[in-house]
Length: 482
Ligand code: PLP
Image (cartoon, rainbow, N blue to C red; front, top):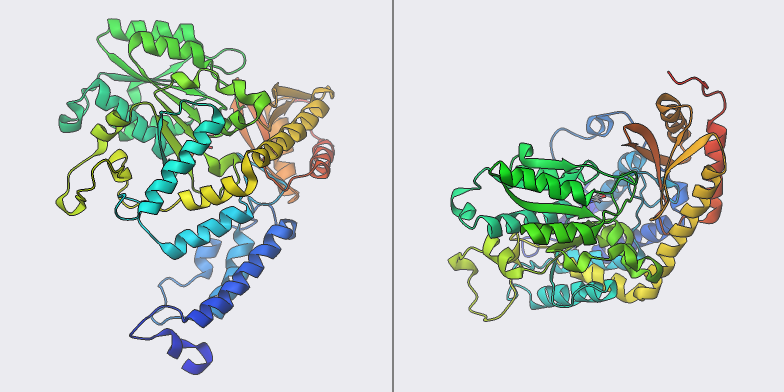
């Protein structure tokens, strides 16, 4: 192919090596058309990728192209090589992990963020990015009915949010740790159902895995506050310094809600930093009849909620709030000459966290918050609650199944009464049918299927089909558990 055919002569331009604006318009239209078709009919794609390990790596060249390639070639490979190996989280039958979905306004906001390509590290590096971040986090805080004076910022993930929270708590408990590292006496309190990101944060912050205590849970998988208080007393008696506890609103395995009010009282009495993980469940605070899920959260020292889970914002968008911005800042700020701006009273978000370079995530959040309004989120969340309750009722009424937890936040956890291997076999059949995708967890040490219903395109008919697939999948499963 000659350069004229590929358009490379236009592409490689020493004055401006970027794509020619006319080409951008043309391919941009093609891509937006493709996205519109995709969102209109995500069912045309497979729900879970069916490919072997390493398959895509074998199909792609070992080295990057020495010369530029045409957009036609790149887009064709996207369709032929990449797409068949994508698991479609936007598919209405995607019920694995926590089912989520992006949305039109979120995708458009993301596109503009990429176009502007600003760095939200300092107010001065892009005033709009910093101030829109301040405005949007305050809007969500207000909708959730949490303290208006909390400081908020947007991060990529709840995992990094809890890492920042644990470092802030470490700073409060052992200010010298910033200079010489932690003492090795600091203790973190979680349950076996707390997200693994907390343990990872403890590892990263130098607290040490052996200093993470797992507090017993009740029959609803909620932390036992009495056991928390007792364990703290024992640790103090042994010379340790309890400093950080996590209560979860919506655990990953079963969406259990830890008793935040009681845990907060124990934390206050013992001077522990309480982090509330509402990565998944926090969004339900938007729904009036679910607002009580967040009771007690106002007493937390930090709180995280992920709009990229149930608020239709494309990955990634996680909101970290804290009642102690000065502590967060004292944990993370460093004075590098090249980053001094001389702008007094400005919030420079790089001072409140690990990352210097920060994406303009507030733009997509702002688009989504404005486009749907609070009522739009309430409608979407209520729909998932309704669908999950319908499926939960079917399972509860059928003696072959055991509903392991009440489907409180759009998550249905069940198993077969026959036992673990039968439940595992049912999941294998469901997923290998190619019609849907579910995942599993262990509750009370037993294999449990999780059906997460959170995609905005999932309808009643989809859940009826899912129920049909579950019943069909039972045929011939050995009644005796292996
Ligand atoms: N906390 C809970 C309860 C979660 O369910 C998850 C992920 O699903 C996380 C934290 C981690 O979230 P992220 O992927 O944003 O780090």
